[in-house]
Image 1 (tube, rainbow, N blue to C red):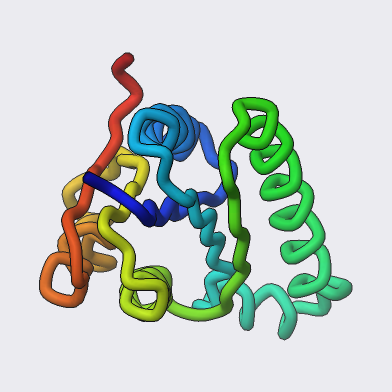
Image 2 (image 1 turned 30 degrees about the horizontal axis):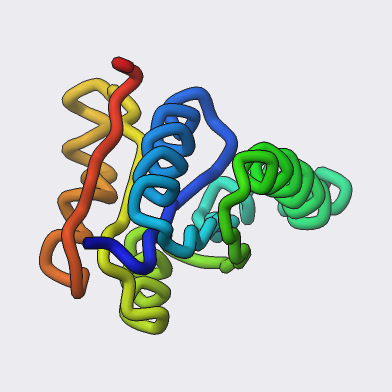
Amino acid sequence: MYRKILLAYDGSTFSAAALKQSAELAGLCKAELHLLSIAATGGGMAIAEAAGAADVWGQGEKELERLVASAVDELRNQHLTVITCIQYGDPASEIAAYANQIQADLVVLGYAHRGILSRWFQGSVSAKLLDHLPCSLLVATGGD
């Protein structure tokens, strides 16, 4: 069924459900699990640097690497084949590009409930992906 599953992971609470569900699917299908993390390069980071925050990019990258390493340890303890990648940029664009690059059969995202104004101004990553993915999309919620 699935040979390559791409998990978009950022270590947040809502991505924990995506981690769990993608691990279960990868185990059942004996699929490669590609764990992709995106260091967003939006305006918030530029504002923090301009305000004089010390090495905002480096601190964010180190934390992301720590979160990814922890997830990889958990996945490998389940005897899964895990491949990791950290990209920089717009999450929707980077996820779609990586899914196309590895020829993913499934992309798994966590669902973060946001207010209507936030969705209206920023849009939904999953909605942006629908037109650009070469495969199916699973949006995991916190429910077991």
